[in-house]
Length: 262
Image 1 (cartoon, rainbow, N blue to C red):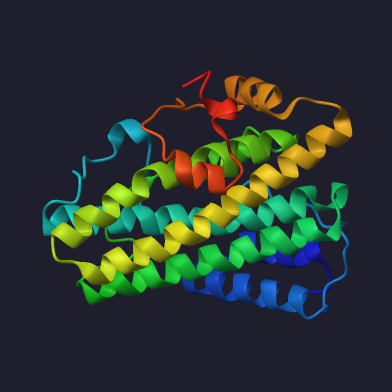
Image 2 (image 1 turned 90 degrees about the vertical axis):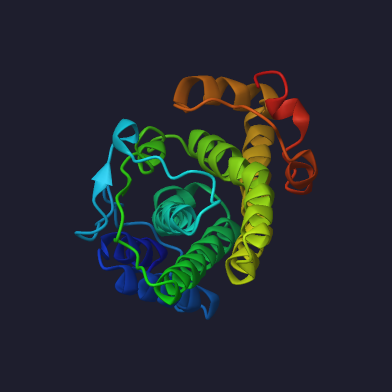
């Protein structure tokens, strides 16, 4: 690895989960130690490499997993979260490698650190699955998570609007309830993992909001209005509550962004 783009592409091209986590950690460490050029001559792939398992299914074929009340439901939920974090590794490094040339060096600082976080999140969830007698790949997973990257591949503001400021922000809304369900079921170990992830995700959403607002200021755009326009164009989901306004506020994602279109 000699450049930001080369390091990011190496993460995206790693199919094996262990190798992807290893590549993510290596890239983040190399950047932090000043071993990577702030260079973007290497293009990002259209899609990242994926392991043979889990089987990837379209949303309408995904089995219902319940709300975590049963042991089977909790395993299914942990597996789904592990898959989200696995894809999030690629989303973070693609953000840096694809769009970093148009931003200050601090942009790479933020998204490489996010990628390292996501790798850590995946690793501890996968370890928890194994402790519970399962593993990542034991169940099918959602095939559409990379779609958000595909539809925003040419517009960094659209990517920021959809991935950290919509998809990750939704995680801030639902994770506290999930933590309480695991605690009620007596699974404190899993609850602590999810609480750690929740804390980190507030920072990730904050990075998205920070760079979105900085770009809007540079382009003379009104951030909330432009975010709403981009969500209407590029976001395939629905912006819906209930919202964790406190966590969103901590991330700079105030209600003037999402309140009018919820």
